[in-house]
Image 1: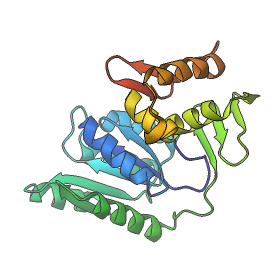
Image 2: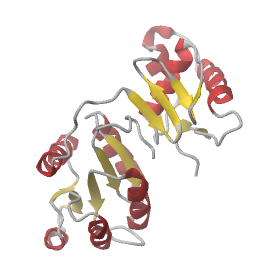
Image 3: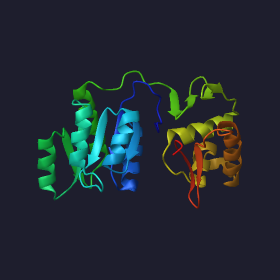
Image 4: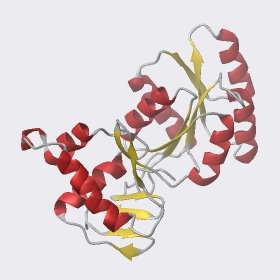
Length: 236
């Protein structure tokens, strides 16, 4: 699970699209709605992710390599006949929309789309399916790492980890944006604020502090993306 919300009553949305940048953008926008998200690069990846992530809604591109959206829909529905599915189609792909709706898709949006429209359609599907959010939890989770926003309790594999306030805020930001590559400057602005006036090497320093406490003798969750920044994600 690559989650930014707790394993709580927050609805889960799986975004499936072979355009990685688009999938990440859509996933990030949906997280701002308070939903838990995960992404998959194609149909086969979506089937694997759905097994562990247990989505409440799937946003599914039609044209994908290896396994297209129509076959993916059929296989997902074989597992969960009531799973709401929103198709993404090209604007001129009328045949895809018709075929998708006949195959059982609940709704569709055309590319390029408005993020607010997608969020509204997802909310509608959740409401109709009775899967709307109840009380949101304050616990963030990535793999076996948990962070309680209210109590400041941080644990990995059930083992308590003590962090300074700055380390806590940095970890919180990484977990809230799990699966997204974050530049050093973006992290600096978010954690230390725009008026900090510091250098990005402070980010490198605190990332090293976190790694010693979070990733020591365990599979790494905080990864360096050469020339781009850092990403928090489950071990591959």
